[in-house]
Length: 398
Image (cartoon, rainbow, N blue to C red; front, side, top):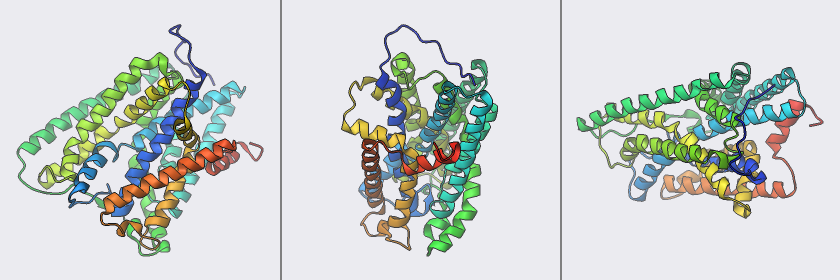
């Protein structure tokens, strides 16, 4: 399979370290955002996870979570998923595989991701994204991967339309805030599996929750498609060539996410009082603008990688986790079940503030995954989940 990319320019040499560092760094840092978002949902057994009556410092934590974390972690994952799909196809192509063989490998890998997702959801955590990624990966392999540059520009049009939608929704929210006189909290859906009294009960709940959750997140194909568009141009492998694009994407992407998330963040902190209908609109705006955080965060990681000439221990460890992101993601779900479930240690209820306690646990769990990934990297060992997926995709000799 031939995957077209922009021709290289003569703007300067591209360091070998740059090409490998940025995607892995983005994936490693992404797992911290996901941990912070998921732990709040687990602690409060809701989606999104939040304390509806915050006091003191929890007000500020709620504000930061809604500005920088909630609905802003999975778009990073989605961008990197689309990016990784092209990288994998390119490696297969370079190894001499035929277009049919490349397509077969990608379809097999994504079908196994669906299986991984089902097992992950049934055994550990309802909010699985692996199954949805597998389904989207199959669609992208069959419909998008072999298309030309002109066709892939459609995704830029879709993102432009999304920006217009956010502007319109933002105007409606501002108008609603001006005319609102209530004091309703942000709406939050209760998740039964996160509040189940026993493991078997939680498993039964998850089996019912996972299909619906998967269906609701399938539209992120637009986000993954943007990652595919970027990978075709080697934006992260060659960040110096795309410095302006990365800079503008970081500012515009994160700026849109922060501004669009501001009303919901203020309501979550108890600093803005609106009625129920307006609160729902602020949450809708928060979710819609969150997709722009995906390319925004990824662009920041690309810019960081561009300036790293000799990766130190921290950057190296983050990149090592990025190379083992599937294992790191699954490790988090095991940790939530062991540490936070009502029928296990239930640590979320043993701190003065569930919000603060949950965030501390999230950071600690993420740091453990960083350490484990670094140790595996020193031993030149793949993560266990990556190894299993590789063998299932390519066979026992992989």
